[in-house]
Image (cartoon, rainbow, N blue to C red; front, top):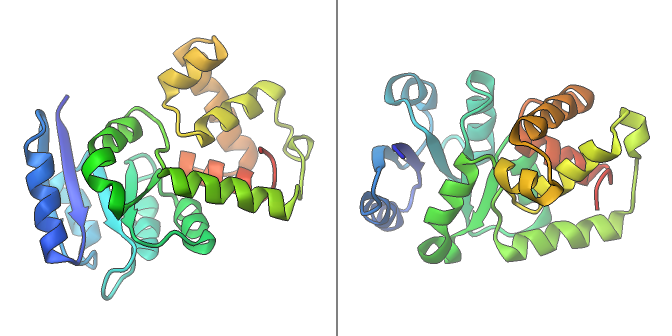
Length: 213
């Protein structure tokens, strides 16, 4: 596996640690590490990243706006948020902007490499505390809409639920005992019905509107 990693982190010490950590992994290559994402469009075009690690609290352009810029250019490249913020608003804003995963910085040393591999396989890795936060938020808000409002089938809901747990496409296939191609077909239909363009956006919308629990 050849993985080109692009990093946006304004803490120089942490950024250097990320570069050191990932450079030790076989097949991982750091194509760029920056303290801000103001030149993001140019980086996307010229560095050809496989995955982007994005801090939320960046100078000039914050991480949320950075993700939005990425999605305006590229709807498929995985974006993994690395942050200290674990509040509901930050989580939902990041996912709704198009982020694929959300990892608290305190878990970087033990979970970063696995999370990158998961997100590259189609998963949505999240720190345990973030997953609990989302579930608790859903329980408090209660359902706003139903799957019928979007004409989602029971199997499409099953796929969404499995993805929301952080499963990769392959894990979803194993979990539901269906083929990988069938998973991709279901996800394509989900995107069309929810009017979204990324997995993170689909999960965020489903969670926000109580379509899954």
